[in-house]
Amino acid sequence: MVTYALAAMDGDDDRVFKALADPTRRHLLDRLFERDGRTLHELVSELEMTRFGVMKHLRVLEEAGLVVSRRRGRHKLHFLNPVPIRLIHDRWIDKYTEARVAAILELKDELEKEA
Image (tube, rainbow, N blue to C red; front, top):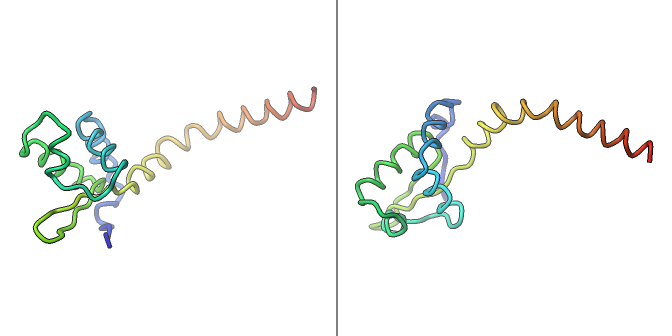
């Protein structure tokens, strides 16, 4: 079982945006989305980057709360935590699209009434 620290999800949007700004970190998130619980070795094998470089990227993702890790025996497994991305969506994307979506739905209703 993986637990998510609430401190990592305290609304610190800057850390999440910083983490998402880098294409390598987005690639790592995509790999974890495809299959959660990957080891560092698995993640390194998919990138043309040193183990140390991948570890630095994972540290930024963990500090932003986007990745959580757990030890299983000798291995450290990395898991995607989608909650901070959802919070960004709700705070920064959803509210800006609400009016547009409502307007499109109203237009759709009006056009269907005329048809």
